[in-house]
View (cartoon, rainbow, N blue to C red):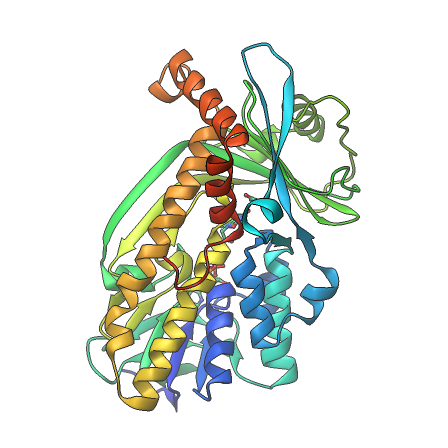
Length: 407
Ligand code: FAS
Ligand code: PHB
């Protein structure tokens, strides 16, 4: 190993997304030292527009961690969502509200992922002066099968660095370097469509999210604030967002979200439209020696169930407890059970996200999911979900988030 500037900590965290930053905070609250290493710069990480829905357990955890001040002020609590669909081909779409408060006694909070990241970075870097290294390059993990793993990288000033740790948390997302090192078994499903997402400077015309099933394709009406609407339309895989003019996007939204009395305010797109492929992936195990995967590094869900970020946070809550137990009490039982513990919740979220995605999206009519029988099954599932209290309760408890540790 070339001459490097050496340092040491207890937990080396790769990635300053929701998983890495929540883990760092949980460890700090427990008196365990950690260093966060992030490839991008702070501005990029704070500007990245992604998830928008916080599950009830996520909000509760952020409150307990003492980082929910702005979330309490600016987050938008929602007690339900609407499913919008036509009961038969050619019939007008109708709205059906799933009342979370009535069904499961709690709800969700709409608050952008980038806001959560900003709050966590402000708390860690600005308020507590704790280390997050931005702009790290050529990061590599070493000796993860030993009890003295380390991380090397080139820092933003071009210096060669090495961090000696007791544990490494691979919170580096789907494209990170950690999962390949674990070389886990991979279970995956790639869906035959993507989402084109836009953020519009336009006041939302509804208080809650609307998930629309339409012959032309799925659409989702969400929001970020009383002034900003977040909208998605289903598009073919490999869609180039530049092929979708603003007018074409608005036209698709008006068509797919059409319903008696419903209007959409148009406005300037604050962000360039982006296309996100729909995929499910689970890596098992989520561990190799002293390297532990968390969040998108270990699993991916289609965003239809609003699970991605919430699942990442649930992983690191388990990991933080296990690491503290091991480093403070010398009891590795939590670390040994980490992967199995997380994978139970991961698979529950994978199934729910697959359920919502399969029920709401338009599949190719030439395929099983998209032929007349497939669409008939979708309409039947939608109708059952909005007319059966048992079915609606099942959707509600999964959507608001099962309590941490309950799965
Ligand atoms: P993240 O990907 O957020 O963070 C990983 C971090 O590691 C990044 O900051 C990255 O720069 C860093 N990193 C990577 N490699 C590194 C290396 N070698 N060295 C150092 N750092 C490295 N979820 C929803 O619930 N709803 C949505 O609408 C939604 N939309 C999404 C849209 C897009 C385009 C994407 C990609 C994801 C979306 N998701 C959505 C899922 C998303 O919210 C993730 O679940 C969430 O970001 C997971 O958080 P992390 O696991 O922390 O991973
Ligand atoms: C969002 O607001 O970005 C959002 C909401 C619900 C989803 C996916 C994305 O299922």
